[in-house]
Image (cartoon, rainbow, N blue to C red; front, side, top):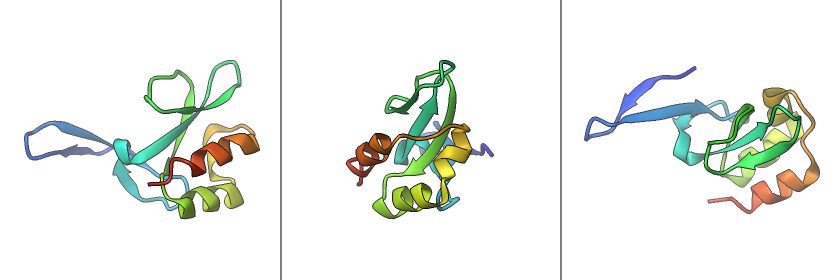
Length: 93
């Protein structure tokens, strides 16, 4: 679900939901994992890649929880390689 939220200067802030904790947060606070039309799963740091995406918080807790309950896999409808989770853990804030 996308909401219209604005900052103090009137600029629109994009809100997305974490697949793990299910909290709505600004897109800048989340990491996007995308499955391209070719079926390749990658981390989309710039939110510019085409394909089906899922968002997860930058916290270790959310990343590990999404790995356990397969939230990212359900979000992008594809298997996520172990290497992706290892890289995600390096994004921890």
